[in-house]
Length: 317
Image 1: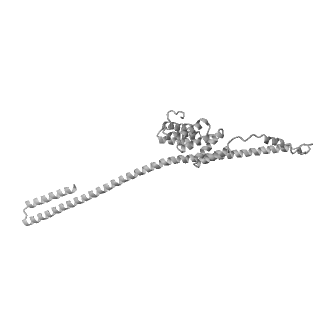
Image 2 (image 1 turned 90 degrees about the vertical axis):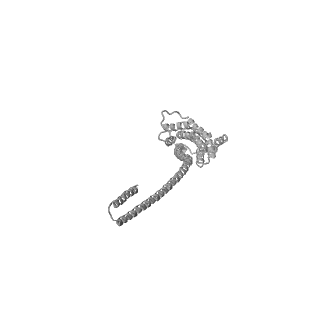
Image 3 (image 1 turned 120 degrees about the vertical axis):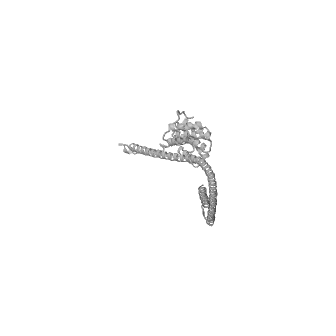
């Protein structure tokens, strides 16, 4: 546009000069020379305009090429980002299931350590009690010994005096009853070790045996909980929910209540029972505030896009 205006102004000047030259009374030779010069200048101006237009056209063409290349690069980046997003979602999905399995195994190891500590404490207390009993027996034997009584004679008792009663006791012992193959502590430790090692069939049998022989022990609720964990890990969610329910109903004082209710909610979510799972997640937050289970339940509720504090919370189902 600027070039056009410059051209128009110059053309006006040229026309004016030509008109002035024509009107002015100048010699014919001088007028011819000026006209030739003006014509040359006009030709130069026209050539400059054409060169400028050619340059502008080339610049526009190069700019269009660059824009097209940029658009192609952006489209390629969008495709790449889409592929990366799908890969990330797949990794997150796979990582979630692996993290659940690892969390179960870590929890099993932690419980194993707690149980070992509890057993060590019991053994220590038993050793202390046994030492006290032995000291007491030693004191009684020393005080009732014939050598310490005034006027007593040191007679040797007959060798067969105690034999009849001992032999009678041995002869009257009842036959051994069909009981557990090992102690409760050893059976539970073996079951927990096999569970953390991924030997789920063997662990299931051992936990079932524990419940069969030691149903009234302190660790019975743990054994029932880990039966649910085995079914949860292998994807048998209905059976897992049944085992968690037994913990909640049969062992109301178990310290596995929060974990059982949380895992029940996760199993319900896995089989599509979102409403029941959401309700139980909220129940974990309400009944067990400040625990690790409550924090995990809050995270699950956040993933579901629901509030952790509804207007009213019912009992778990």
